[in-house]
Amino acid sequence: MSGRFILVVGPSGSGKSVLLDHLHSVHPEIIFPVSCTTRARRPGEVSGEKYYFVDKGEFDKRREHRDFLEWASYGNNYYGTLKSEILPPLAQGKTVVREVEVQGARQLIEKIPQESLRVVFIDAGSWNDLERRIRARAPMSDVELLARRKRYEDENAFKPQADSVVQNADGKLEEAKNSFVKAVEELISK
Image 1 (cartoon, rainbow, N blue to C red):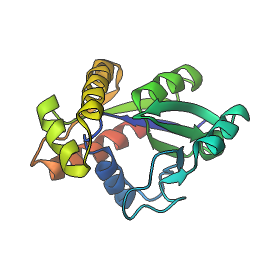
Image 2: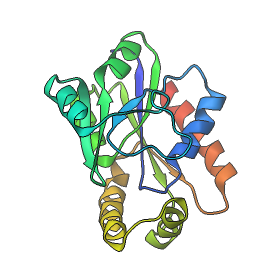
Image 3: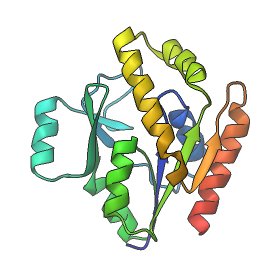
Image 4: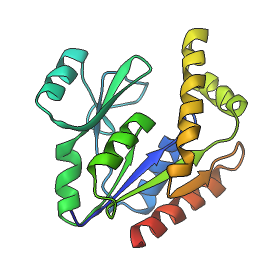
C-alpha cells in the first residue's frame, strides 16, 4: 500500500461535510470514496455521489460478503467503507480522504499500515455549540439528542489520537476551510 489514507473524524455537526466539499474543490485529484449507509437521504442527496443508500438487508448482505473495510452503527443506521472504494486507489499510490465515525476510525487504525494512515479531527467547540448546529440541520427527538451528546463525549475522547486537529468555530468557517486544506496537504507530504 503506497498511497495515503486520511480519515476525517469529528462530532456530528462539526462541519466535516462542508470542509470535505471545500477540499474536493481545491484538490480534485484526491479520491473521496463513496460510502454505504442505511440512513434516509437528505434533501438534494443522490445515491452514488457521497453515499450508496441501501436498505438494512442489502447492507447485511454486503457485510456477510466482507465487502467492508469497516462498518459502524450510528444513530440507528449503518455506515460502511467499501474495500473496493479504498484499496485500489491506495495500491496505485493515490491519496484517499474519508469521513468516518470514531468506531470506524478505530477499526481502520487496526487494519491499515500506520505509514499510510493519518487522522484529522474536526473540533467545533463545546456541546452547546454543536447542539445549536445539529438542531438547525434537522429536527430530532430529545432521546436522539441525548444519544448524540454521549457520542460527542466519546468522539472528543478520541481527539488526542489524531495527527492534526482543525478548529471549526461558529463564524470562522473560512479560517477552518484554510486550516483543513493546509492540514491535509501537510499530512500527504509526511
